[in-house]
Image: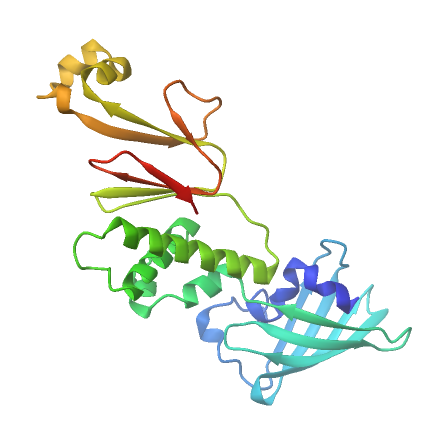
Length: 272
C-alpha cells in the first residue's frame, strides 16, 4: 500500500529517472514538460509489492496519477508535486476497498544529487562514471568553496575540512534516501601530505625510520640495489587496508577515523 512505499528503493524512480517515458534519466529531462506521462513498474522490495506507476506532470510542478498493484486489483489515486532536485511528495488514497491513505516521498538518485551539487567546471572535468571519480570531484568542490583549489599546496587542515564536508554531505543524502551506509577507504594527497579515511574493513600504518627499519622491511639485497644515499635519516610511512590479520609492527586505525600523514611528523589519527 502507499504508506509502505517510502521503503521501496525504486519508489523514487517516479522522478529520479528509472522511466521517463522509457527514456534515460539525463539532466536534460529537467524541467519536466507539462503533460508528460511518467510510467514505470517498480519491482517488489523490502515488503512492498510490485507497483505499476502512471503519473502525469501538471502545471507548477504538480503530479497526479495512479499507482496499482496485483494486476490492477488494488489502485490508489496519488497527487502531489516534485522539485528541481528530483525529490517529490505524493499523497494517496485507495480507490475502493478500505480507502486507505498514505504518502510517498522520493528523491533523485544519490549520484544525480551529488553530481548536481558540483560546480559546472568540475562536472565538465569528469571523464568516467565511477563512484570514486564522483567522490573525488565532490571533495574538490569543497576545496574550491574554501578558496583552496588551484592555489598551490593545500594545508592539511583545509584537506581535512573538505573531507569532513564530503563525508557529511554523503551521509546526509544517504539518510534522506534511506540508503544504508557502505564502507569506504578514501585516500587523497597533494604530494606533500596524505589523508586517509577509514570506514571499512581494516586499516593500519607503519612508520619506517632509519637503517634498521629499512633492513627489516626490504632486506640487505634490496637496499644494496636501490642505493639510498643516507639510510640513517630516511623516513617514510606505509598505510594499507584489508589485512587478513594484524601485522607485527603496524598501528591499526580504528573504524570511522581519519589519518593525516606528512613528510616530517608522525601520523595523527582523529575521528571522522
